[in-house]
Length: 169
Image (cartoon, rainbow, N blue to C red; front, side, top):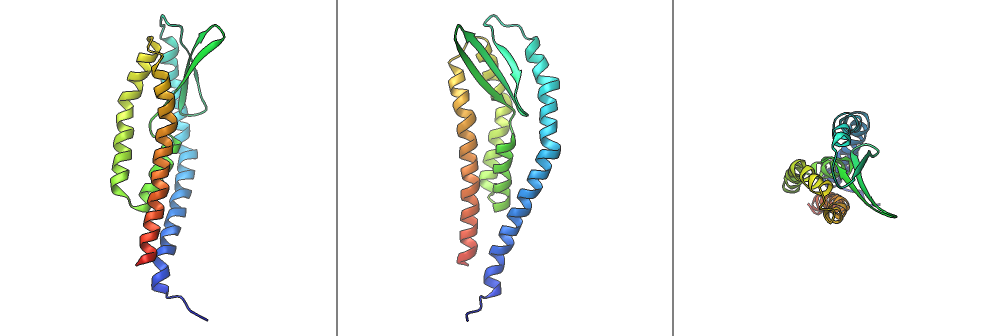
């Protein structure tokens, strides 16, 4: 029977315990505090402002589940539907949790700066879309899916990289 060296296993085990605790804290905090705040901001501040905005291009708005507003425009049987989301939504906060748990400061800073820049970019693009630049809806719809996937993959790969370095030492 071969006994494993405790000093060698302990950093890996404590790392994964830290990851699990971080994910539990993220889940509880997001579902009990952040998501209700996002829903309140959308329903009580942003959506009434957009609904009151009259534009000549016939865009309508309706709120999504928590952190998004859908803008749509009908062209007969066809319609353009664009999802405008708040920065730091659930997917991004999950990626941020993974990056923080892995201790990857460089990607954490990149994620935070990118999301802060979206506070200015998304309203500007939304304004352009509802004022006739409907081709931008393709860009926004692609961005909403792609940037979440990129940051989540970065978070998972960051965890794997950190775990691999702990097992090699």
